[in-house]
Amino acid sequence: MELLETYLVPLATAAGVLLFVCGVALLRLSWLGKRPGNVPYLISGWMLIAGAFWAFFRAWDVEVGVAYGLIVLALAAYGIIILRREIRVPKVQRAREAALEPEERPTNWPRAIAKALLSIVLAGIAAIGVGVAFAVAMPLATHDRIVVGGLLVPVLWGAGMAWTLSDSKLLRATLLLVGISAVGYAVAFLPKVLA
Image: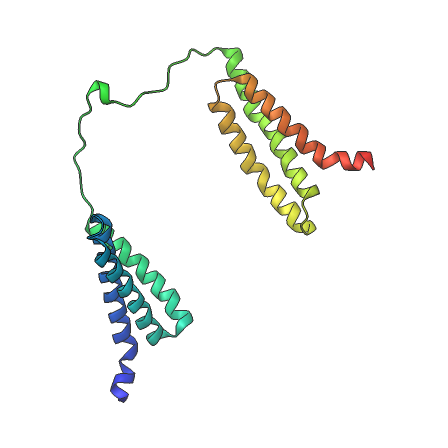
């Protein structure tokens, strides 16, 4: 009995790893199969994975067993995917099957400068307005509002730049960014002005 207790952790871990690999392989077979023939693979795969977690719980306790089990499950899934990968030779597409490319639009310097100003300046003003509005008006603790509002600014600025540069209509981009700026600064400063 003492011999079994000595080797319980390595034996249960090895059994759990084997059950994880077999369970993931069965789940992969169920994914590739057609219904309803894949249902036995699906049920068996999840039962093996549950058994593998039980083996890890027996070997390592529940808290540590969950962590180790999730790691081994992820590694088993990656291993099965790598072993079953296919290397395909790309087909040469005929001209009519090729994907459509964006249409070529002639650009001029005034339009390019306007897009740059919109994407850099106006998108930045709008992002700062939303960040300040969040930092002033949200019902959170003061430090949380300031930190989240500050973190929102670069994300929104980048999103505004990407959207402005990809939009073909300058007027639409201008109106939307001006509107967002007006709403953001109104939410941030109008209550103090009116008070």
